[in-house]
Image 1 (cartoon, rainbow, N blue to C red):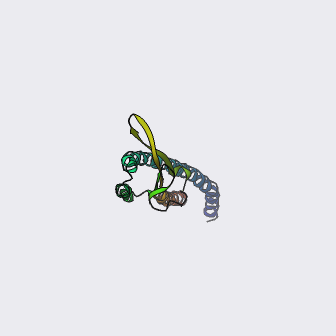
Image 2 (cartoon, rainbow, N blue to C red):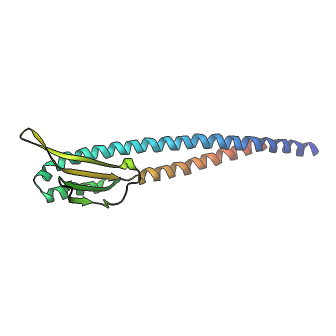
Image 3 (tube, helix red, strand yellow):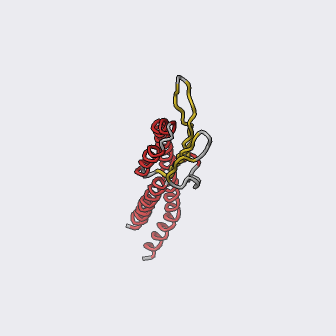
Length: 170
């Protein structure tokens, strides 16, 4: 009986070393994985932002040139369908707001999530600036995905630690 408690005590001491090491190793691996995933999703979102901005510049150039506010409003209204869209501001060449959608005064979640681009048309082989478009997206989908990953990784970490503890005592 005395040997049983001594061996359990030695196993307990081993667990006091191994559990923190396993926890630290998994925490570092999962932390790096979450950070890497966040960086990749952020880069993808910035690419989407640049692509949407380029499309908007092309689609709004001539309506802005012709001061067709109905066409401008119709075009930017389609952006609501994008789950990452935050706001758009369309300005004339004098900097006056022509049309907007969303809260254009709200700062973006991240500085990279807001882009501006001049809008130009070609008139008689000359580029003419007709205004500017400011487009902002949000990273809420990135953050919700990150939270899901962290919760999932926490479950995996708990299972690993419990398996280690159970494996030592069985």
